[in-house]
Structure formats: structure tokens, C-alpha cells
Amino acid sequence: MKKSYAILEIFDDLLNEKEITIQDIQEKYDCSRRTALRYIRDIKDFLSVNHKELRLYFDKMKKTFLILR
View 1 (cartoon, helix red, strand yellow):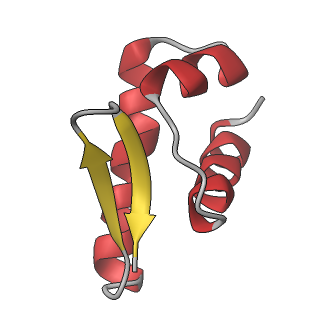
View 2 (cartoon, rainbow, N blue to C red):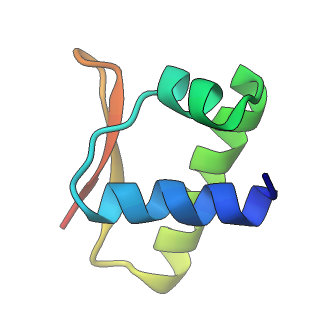
């Protein structure tokens, strides 16, 4: 799967209020932890420039990422 498609799919899941773990990304896209973290960072960077009303949040207790509005 292409990187851009994976990032868009992760972003879409987050917009639909799905909580995502790094392990979820690794399993779904058959990628390393480092790559999964890079996908998350790309989404976070995109939000900070293009959607300042949204924030990517990491829940330390559940170890999940979600978007806060």
C-alpha cells in the first residue's frame, strides 16, 4: 500500500472519532513502529498547518491517538 493512501486512511479513521494505536497501524499497513510513528507525525504536522481547530491527542493511559475538536 502506498504511504499516502495509508496516511489518508488513518486520518479518515481519526476524523471519524476512531481511537488508533501504533500497533493498529503496524498491523493494518504491515509497517515498522518507526514508520507508523512517521505517519502519525505527518498527520499531526498537517493539522497544525491546515486545521488549527483540530488537535491530534495521545491518551497515555490507553496508548491511543485521537483527534480533539
